Image (tube, rainbow, N blue to C red; front, side, top):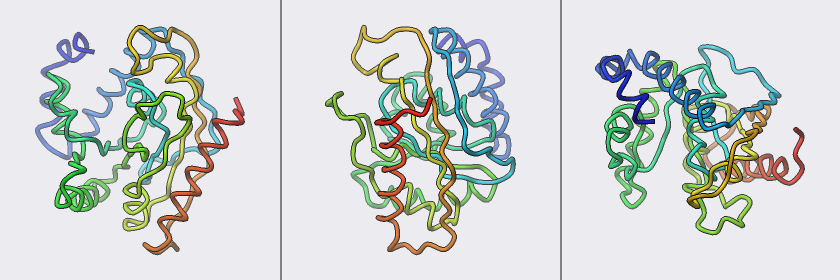
Length: 227
């Protein structure tokens, strides 16, 4: 990771100087993700029920089990999107420098920070980008949990901004590279890109239904793999 960032450091720094130049940074980030995934012996296998349209904004959501989830999400979508993630990740040396300048950061213990996410997301959507949130809010400490409960954030944003939910299921990330050190190994990383869930006719009081519907789609795929 650090070798790739250092090698392309000048271009990466230029790409974050203006918000309008984010697509250049995104292309570099995708290159980084491909470099990391294949370099570690992980082979993405993607099955799609939908083809994401260029110029259309989505709310990408997926189960969260591994440090490779970010790389795999970048691999799957070719159109620029912005992560909503924990503020704490901005403290990681070098990686955190770019993370703070390209992602929407949220301090979950600060209500003002959570509200600010909506304003920042609107600005990114106005520029034609999509948004990505892992709705479990983090990786469960208990690795036996197949899929943790979802939080409301992604679904509130999707309804607020009238963008469809684009659910994905990551099957093998925990097995390949979990948060338990010295575990996992090379092999396939299966991804199921589910059909879109529209939100244009939904109201904010429907967020619980939307959250449960999305979680059920991902959970069903985890329990009954289609690839």
